[in-house]
Length: 457
Image 1 (tube, rainbow, N blue to C red):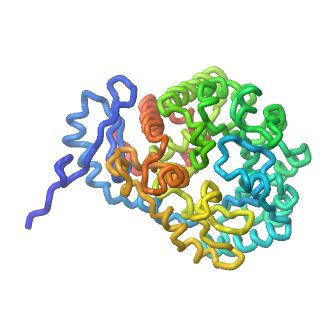
Image 2: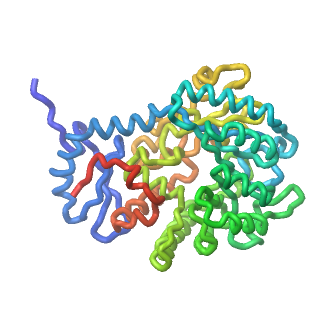
């Protein structure tokens, strides 16, 4: 029997898709199964698809597939989104957690928090060994509602974990900031607009008071502290201000920001969702502006969620965030711990009782991660979703987020509500690569973290 020869687009070879990317005489060619890609001159496309690219792909296909499979199915858990309290001093209109628990929920005391950290440390020593420090991100509701317990845990385990705090920052004092800097704690701060009237519209206390002035003062006090970022949740209320936000953050010398789509997990998020195409236009304008500001000042403003898409294209294993791959990182690379000690795939699921996988006080974490509440998320793959399974950029998008698609449709295996936005942003990422500007959009040192499997000339 003769060996079957691989040909392109016949059913016995690679199936390449050609994407327009907004650059004259350039297109991206993508093989969807492996995430293999190349940017080529349009006039050379027939020759590339009939000879060079196909042959190169065939020779390295198994290597590409192995790399993608390791990323998707074989990474050990290495982080926990640790919710020390259910309570929050803010009542943000789009929060993914139910209002009742944010208003009247429980908090851990220092003894409980330290005990839970000890359980997590024992688990990670078994999974990762002694040479790798796992991450603990104190997350929301608002972790500073349990500030004394959080700081006691950091003090106790500062040599064992890499710590981070995601906060609205309104409860942070100067002494808190000194503690954070001294212990090299990562800090994520939330702010949604460059002006008080818009920022305080969606992010406000239970009494209706916003936090704009306080948040800006915290940013100014952080100065050149390298381990902080500012997260903006993009809604229909602030989507037209993204370029103004970029100017604002650049003026404040913020090193890293995120312009994250609002999650549609709760009704408030759904009511706040911006139109996909409006969001895409405003986002790319803002990203263009970060390049222009760099050209003028020599100082980067990294938009981390976009940089992560670039990293996923340039070198899939270089991703720092695991939302835009399927299965996503929830329950796989990380999991969330509630204030009760219950495990969920990620924090987005904490308000969804069906995904409570068990309590670390009563059940070994290894067993919890094998429950259907976790495996239903870790087995969610774009190959099971229509129309995602035939999309060329499925491994650069991942059809996020499983929590919001479940709450929207009652089914995990459905497309992302921001599908058009993600597709357009990936095309824009290829445009940046074609223009050879990717270094301006990436975090410093990314090239040292990236090992090239293939370069097409």
